[in-house]
Amino acid sequence: MPARRIALSALTVLILVLGGILGFGVANNGWKAAPKLALDLEGGTQVILQAKSHNGETITSEQMEQARQIISQRVNAMGVAETEITVQGGTNIVVNVPGKIDEATSEALRRTATMSFRPVLLQVGPNAGVSDAGGASDGTSGQDAASLGPVAQDVASASDGGGEKSSSSSEGVNTYEGEKAWSQAWLNTVDQEEFAKLDCTDPDTLNNHTISGRDDEAVVACGAGGTSKLILGPVVVSGEAIKDANAGADHNQAGQATGYYAVNLSFNDAAGKAFGEMSSALYGGQGATQQFGIVLDSLVISAPQVQAVTTTQSTITGNFTADQAKELASQLKFGALPLEFTVQSEQQISATLGSDQLTSGLIAGLIGLILVVIYAAFQYRVLSIVTTASLAIMGVLAYLIITLMSNMPEIGYRLSLAGVAGLIVSIAFTADSFIVYFERVRDEIRDGRGIVAAIDHGWDRAKRTILASDAVNVIAAVVLYLVSAGGVRGFAFTLGLTTILDLLVVFLFTHPLLQSLGRTNFFGKGHPASGLDPALLGRDLPAYAGRARFRSPEERGKSRKKKVGDQGSASVGTETLAERKARLAREAAEDSHTSDTLVERSGSHAATSGDSSAPTTTPKEDR
Image (tube, rainbow, N blue to C red; front, top):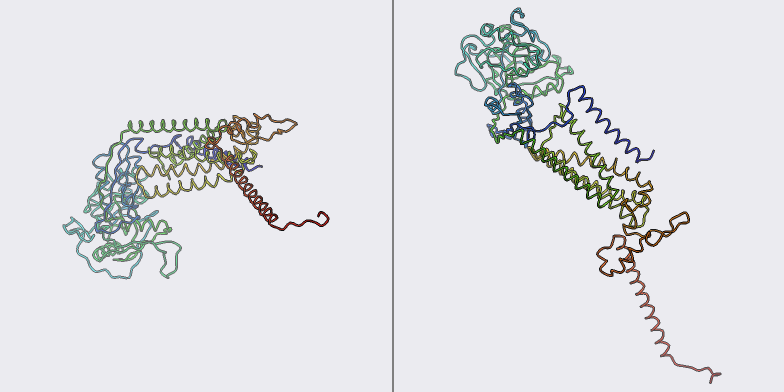
């Protein structure tokens, strides 16, 4: 099978596969047949938050990503649907919220993340009530099966803890007077009706439930992943007391690797003392259970069971994979981020304005497309169908890819007004590739090649130019995407995507299609309307046309040459590339011939002079 047919077949299969995936998603997964629109086209509120560290240290990308997750958790917990939260520019978090945000959501965006360690007073099934527990339970399931490993340190006695929270709360340690924070007496302070109504199997409840109690109160919460329902005691240690957390390989008591991963956690001295007292009490059976909960912004991320007394150094194990251990360590390390956010800008965008902008953008793109088609028809005649068809194929591919990316939850791409601008600009880039290719083919025809050979040789020259041009566009798009923020990224993304599609279309469609057309009688024999007529391009056709037929002077383009010759020197400005090459070669040959003539004449003159100066002798017989 010829290479051109393989290329066209591959492109057809690609379009069918993309279309089939989209059609299946629309029919079975509730996908939309059109790309989802970004905030500037759909309408809503955009808030840009700028992060600042309390201690003046450099803000890392890990901290910003953790802050993004925490803010996303807060907004989702407040029931705000279809919110997009992204990190841009290194220290900026962009929050796109459909509609108008209320004061509570605005406050949640600004609030610093909080983490706390609370003893578990009760753990039951995800939809059970207090009466179903049969007393305090220390059973675990899922991620809550994590345990607190041993550290060889003794625990000094701590001051009384529990009861009403006093004014002493420093270095991440909360002190109380009265009952200990892990005492079962705190169970009597919980609203049992609220506890019974909480259904942790419901995804909406799991995502939107917030811990409403204060630090000095017992609270109701769902376990990690909705595997259980918990009652937690007052806060013993807050997240700001964590010095470091990292993931590493887990080892048993003999020092052998278990094949799982663990999380190593360290506190400051004051928090280590308080945490040691809690772990000692829970390990010794003085608490309602032997578990404590790690709460990040109203979400229980883990509830490990104490298996040994620990203080400033602790190890959390639980058959973690490497990714699970890294995620938990990241949550612990950056759970109480030393960051505060200020609102850099807040913009309200109406849906009507976005609709008008989208309509204007589509009209502008349609006008640009029509102008390109008109220019191609005027310049290349019937050959312009290749340009039009290539633009249509590129539009189909761009639509399918953008729509698929928009419907896939892992990507969630939304088309913005800047993205529409990138699609419009890509029309010019794509047309430029066609023009480079067609003009290379025409130059080969002017140089005397046949049309089929001109297409192949012109492609060899044009593809290097096209690759270099599109490589520059891709590099510019990548750099612009990495260093920009906001809507400019949408422009850079569509610019890079359409540039790659331009290469795909030119290599798999435009060139194979032109090769196929070049083998037809209409294009292959250079019909005047084909756009590849050698006579119109400035090249004379051979007199013999085959099958005992000869071309007339008009068919061979003699009339055009005569007209050019009559114009004299004024015609130089309208020379084709092939004519200019022929004229220069002719002038060089004439100059060479003139030089040779002068040399010959000079030699002849020298010989004549030599003969006249020689003595004349007359033969004897003549005398």
